[in-house]
Image 1 (cartoon, rainbow, N blue to C red):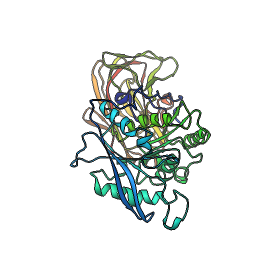
Image 2: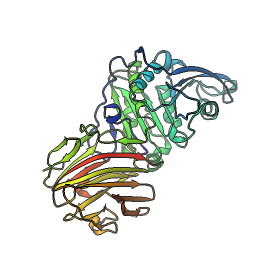
Image 3: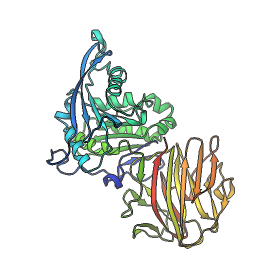
Image 4: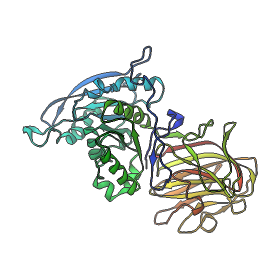
Length: 457
């Protein structure tokens, strides 16, 4: 996915969201509650600005209002992504401000440097067609897509692209976000449902989960453990898992109440509009877990390096943090073999709805390539090359995955250029636990540093 997922990364926010994917067997970690005072107005910080905007709605045949939050330091000559934040059935466009303290939560996050600068638009989710046709919110989809978004994009300096729009809401707003957002992934690619999963999957997800994984950058589903809608949210989560659609599943402590939704906003907003991720912070194993291959060596952080001790035969770590892209991304890292004679840089990585692996220094110390391609391992397919590696020397690897190709560079030289359309890809059976992303060595002690990922789209 895009995807996911979340976030947000420990190097940005210090926590590891419960990203789930059917290929990742580990149970997701529970997210912590927001810190005490996260929704309390602070003194001596720069604040965003709230505006109440009146606009003409063709969908309803009248004038309507929405609340717009402009981030601290807002400039008219800059360009901003937009987060459309929807209220529940007991409120209107003022709900998130008056009851949810949205502007205070966002101001505090900006003060802590935890948000990408964005505009937040809080519309009225009750929209009825002229003449009272349909239900109380039956015209909201048209109002959002044909009136609200065009107004925002013609009156404010925004980035008018699907990758720069987010849609999320609570309860009724969660249902609207799912029903509209997942139907219109050409408009929104960051989608969140707080206490309102809806139970069944929309047709587009059921019919084409691969396309959904490729388009979505984040799909967040959450609910309080005492919420009356928990069963529906759990069913929606289970449906996503069954279709292998990457998402963040978060269970909070509480019911169908504002403390839960405030925490959702605090967590979800930090994941939005991030295209570059520092996966290893040089100080901890945050967002990583030791892979239980059996016979694995020790895993530690030493002097800013991620060190895998020699295993019998494998040692590795795998990603348990927020959802990361499954297609259209580039992963870069530096790896060093310290001792041993086999692969020191084994990377498990997603390719859309499947996975593959890259190894450097395998099969006796020199083979590099992708496993598996049409059932053949790296030593036996056309991606194989023979390289010379010295112990205690750093090598830079760059892995690029697009819908058309898998490409790998060793330092400045391209060593893999695989067109994978109509090819059967799979992760090598020995590294099957290195998902969704994993780093692995074989009978070799190695170290990694500068592990980063960026989206290409």
